[in-house]
Image (cartoon, rainbow, N blue to C red; front, side, top):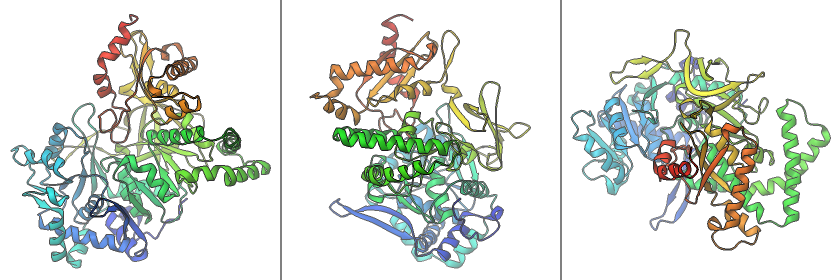
Length: 610
């Protein structure tokens, strides 16, 4: 359990502004928020850092600035920015006014953005630069959208709109401690802290209201199972439109008085970890997969005797983890061997990735490939997989150092319940489960049944020890023409156990068998080829494709007949958020990929009939 810092009032009465005041008073000189800055020439100038006292001072300035624009208590303010200080600080400042900050995904389609602007009734939106300004400007002239003002962060892109710099300057002139203090003290724990709009993959995004109280309840429950050093650092790279980063990157750091490092580019996460050597790290499954691929590629270049030593140390680490997983104390001889292996072999390798100081590692948002979990266990790193939804304020179940099962997503936090419906759907109940989706008129459309249960749309099972095991999203289950149900994630993760296969999509709804799109791992393939003396582009080399064929055959041997892949196509371009195949949290956009590769998928069936 993490040391709980002083709580300024009873937990059921706590608000985010009260916690920020506590941080400024008790931990004012400690670092709170850091971000990379650049010189005039574009070179990296290193980290800029604000202390907790300075963060609260900035919040007071920005609150006065937003108040001067007419932002009022209870109204939503929309934001479309990356993970930059203006975003983080504006979010906290608006909360002190009693306003409701709402982040919109930067990848949202124009129709989704217009829906959110219309539904939220927001009069002010804060956007990053020219691209976002062009997306939002037409909404100012739309009579169905209440939007009145844009604040633009990049000075050169503000045009006729309010620049962030001018808003900040106005705030400095108008700032009043008395007014600032009076405004946030009027906020109650049951008031909305934010509204998170779901991704809207099956229709318009839905609005999920999150209160100060539900955030605090979740934070307290997490603190009972999470073991972290005081004032620990967090690498913040997921979008703030995602409930995971709202909790991990804003609310939990304020609750714990920890240190946030903003990472504006997901491609820079690994480099940021190498420079910071953090004690905790959260990675969605795709991030852990990419990091594992990088380490595997590096290991493949080592001399054989060094690789053998690392593998031997890894077996010792996995055996040590197995004892812990069973809830048993490792024998003294194994404990000593593990400590030696970690100090002399494993930690020097982990140090190259900045991971030798890790004491807490976690993942969520999608089923984690078991081979990736086992790979990291070979370095003594146990990824504490968790599960939750926007509708549950993030984490609902989690593993912990004292109770975990590799491959599961753990057990419910204190005070929360789950059950499995007849069709396998996971249903949840508890204090952090929302009451319903917010309507445009501010009322709530109830989403719970008469007994308080919410159907999550996820399929899973609970084992005899109470651990939850995810199968897939209910809407993503494949139903073959023979009526069999198949989890695409299960098949995809089995295929990806081979290091040459970086990404996979399985298709087969309404067909008699499954086909797949396989993406070659761009980091592992060159190392694999080099180790075998293969020159040129590995993506086109026959030996690489023969190895992928063997990988598919090996995966099929572990799957039942309905789950097996009959045909596949190898692709060489990696899927990503910027090209639309992945969500901002790096999950597959199945519909987008199926649309992009529709002709390829059709051809796979045409090749052999159906």
